[in-house]
Image (cartoon, rainbow, N blue to C red; front, side, top):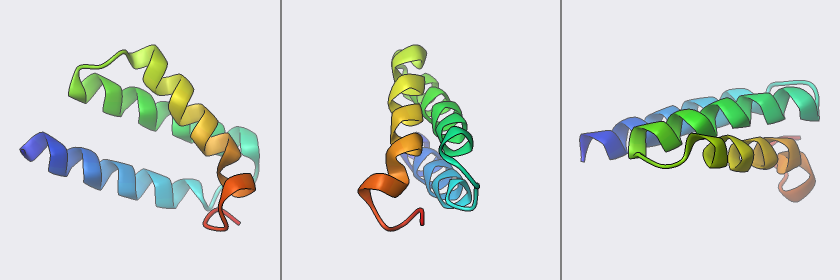
Amino acid sequence: MQYLRLIAAFAAVTSLSACLLDNDLERGLAGAATGAVIADVVGGNVVTGAIAGGAAGALCDEVTRICR
């Protein structure tokens, strides 16, 4: 249960800080790092987590208004 809280806090902080980045590449790198760390903590595949996080970060401003 403590891992879940740690992951939620880490994801919230990094996702909010990623919105302050200037371009898709920077947001993609921040998302990839976040995805890799979260996947490692929960015991998942780090590469898959990095790919998913990178895609989410890079496409954040196209899909939602949060990152604009």
